[in-house]
Length: 366
Image (cartoon, rainbow, N blue to C red):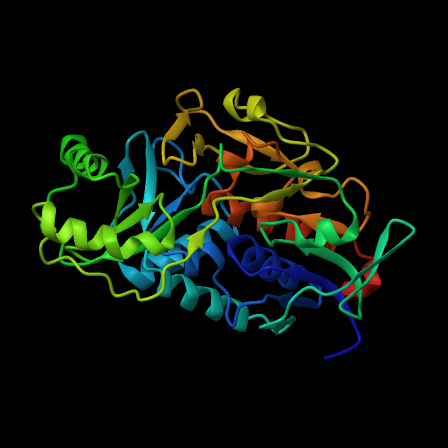
């Protein structure tokens, strides 16, 4: 690998994949770097089985371009059927392993993308408001898609952070051989009642592509999952034969830290469906917050509406050549509770890949 690259994308979740592919297609020589061995991020590794934030409340694609391309690739990979309405919003079923496969294929198709796996961010050198180098590599621009603002923090940017009162993490895992009907709120409520009587933290269920399988979002610690499974098998009808293929249970972060940009997207912007003259992406997912005790709070946009995300929310306030997308975008704790979902991460990632490439001198991407 050369000692200089046009754009470095740090983090290979939905936003990082979209940013790297878009930057490369725009003509920039791009390095995608991640501490994991392959691309995927939350979409590929957390245990999620539903893609959220891709659609309007009428089921149409909200963002064209790479977000739609990735979603359609997953539809062809898994054949899960049409997106369906869950409450007031549409979601698309998928398999996490398919998310990884589609990501790998799209990245491999771009000759201008190099990758560095199992690599941590060790050093960011900033001079005169510009990142000069990252991990010893000279850079033209950097895109922070870590979800925890790792580049922004190291570069000395001002950050906003979430906590367990609004974005509490969860343990997500699959349960197979579930024979209980969980499609009705009453059916789920009865399960939650059993858990409450046993002193166990609450959980929520998500549908899966595979029949008889559900994904569980558990608000308790990973060490408590074996006890939860044993309780379901022994005390709750319809779960007698349930099992999980997982042996390792880890906490999935909903969001972490955001870099303050040239514009800070607010919860008011989201809920009022605000539009911007420099808009580069759209969002329509509700403001979805989770407390430490597993309780969910949802505030919806007006029917038929969406909000826009301005370019200023993807460009760091202090460092000229630092950009961000996905969960690291410039947003307050309410706005990120909407913009953190995968559909929005794909859209902001694609937008920031183009913005970063366009910020480079023309000769660098010729």
